[in-house]
Picture 1 (cartoon, rainbow, N blue to C red):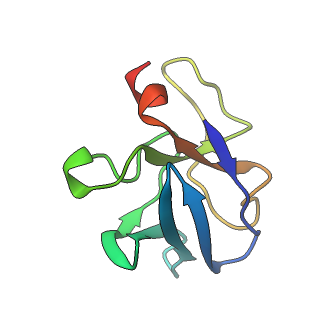
Picture 2: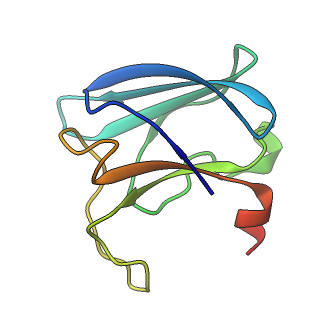
Length: 109
């Protein structure tokens, strides 16, 4: 698992090399207080407008062409079922809410 550094702002775009993929990620919080994510690889959309939830995979399906997956983790929640914590939002992005890349090995475990 790799932590992707993000800023604690309501809207941001970042370009990262993860899993050997040139990836652009857009994170944006809407008026309903939910955080959403778009993922592009080599400028092609993989997913758009996916709501970000604590400890839930964002891409979810390998057939979409993304190697691995992305997930937010609430550092103040628990990791054992049933997990606790709240969904990611600003303030707290990058500190309380970590943005994680999971490799295919991480997903298999």
